[in-house]
Image 1 (cartoon, rainbow over the protein chains, first blue to last red):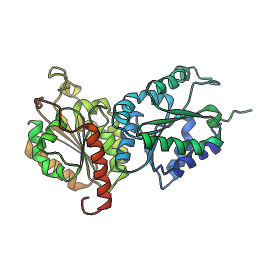
Image 2: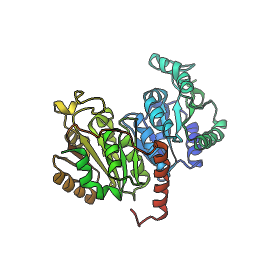
Image 3: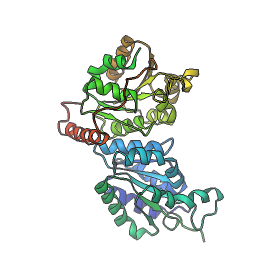
Length: 172
Length: 196
């Protein structure tokens, strides 16, 4: 499978390095290695969701209970979570770290991913969620740390987009 | 059974626990019975009270958590029952007041529980190990105490009249409640063992 094992490890290590102890996730192809890493880590509480919006509630609960958490989800799952993000994470000032696999961008071969890919950044901007796109492994650790710092400072959601160049290794 | 009477019947047990409510009549009535720093009222974000409760229960297994929910809210996030059942936290009781309507909109706006959908049966089929449906204060007191004592995930559905308070507003801003609640949970960590 050409999902990058090495870069998934880089992302996972960045999350644990900034104290994330609970991950809620709805698995999708680009996230499979990350889910496995979380599952095999005895220090991590992994919550597999039925639908992504649940994860906003779970992260809010974890934050109020004093545990750092993040959500791993596809951009379509982000789109499905918008009311939770607005009416819980933003309304209640919850620092919510969103790691969003950014499907449907340049290089996308699946027609069904393209509409969501086309609106993801626009919706993030409309929600006033600060975000950065991660394209290469070298930037991951610092950006995850900075995203977590910003989320905890402004008590709002912050998103990192996991891009094709980071998550996918093209078969040559 | 009126929801406010049901809440009054179990208030002594709620008062010492971590409680997360949905929006609308339940938080207004619980607040009228007496606010505690361990009570968190989730105004808006319908359906997510149970997810917030799950997040707390998983993050802090030593804290006994009660989610006070409604039929309309649960129906908006039915998958939550499968997620609760999947992780089965022993420190979580999910109490659902089922009045068969979306009361804050109006009594004529019924939910699917009015036409036979059975939330306790759905919870049991989702894999929740302990479920009950109660119709009187005595039944509720008994089922709720038993659920707390059993130390396993439980869903208790309390059938109540579609009647609420005259006002849904409470004299506690949601952010004040949120920060007070967070600080309270932090304090319970410091005094771990005493309050839990």
